[in-house]
Length: 148
Image (cartoon, rainbow, N blue to C red; front, top):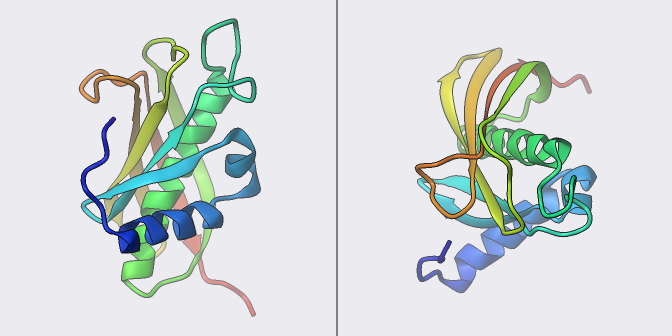
C-alpha cells in the first residue's frame, strides 16, 4: 500500500500513536502506517513473530492485528471527543476469510455505534487489495469510567 504524501506532522502522529500501542502489538511489529479520515491504519510486516505454517500468517497474529486496529480506531474517536474511559472487551468475533501470505498486512477499524458506555467496532484486514479482506472482526466494547 503506497502512502499518500504526508507531512512530518503526520509522521509524528503515526509515531506517537505507534508508541501508544500495547506491548503485545509492539512485540508483533504492529505499527500505525497512516491515518484515513482521522482513523489509524495499522500494519504488520510478515516475519517470524507472526508466521504460523510456513509462508502464512498465524491466526492469533491476524486476530491481534484486528483487535489492536479496533481499539486504535476507538481511542482516536474518544480522544477527539476528549473522553478517556477504560476499555473492556465484551465480545470479539473474528472471521478468517483467506490465509494471510508472506507480505505486509493492513487493518482499519470503523466505529459503527458509539454510546456513552458501549461501542461497536468493525475491523477489516487486507493485504494487496482492500476490497478482498483476509479477515474481519466485530468488537463490542464496554467503556467504563476510570476510578482514581
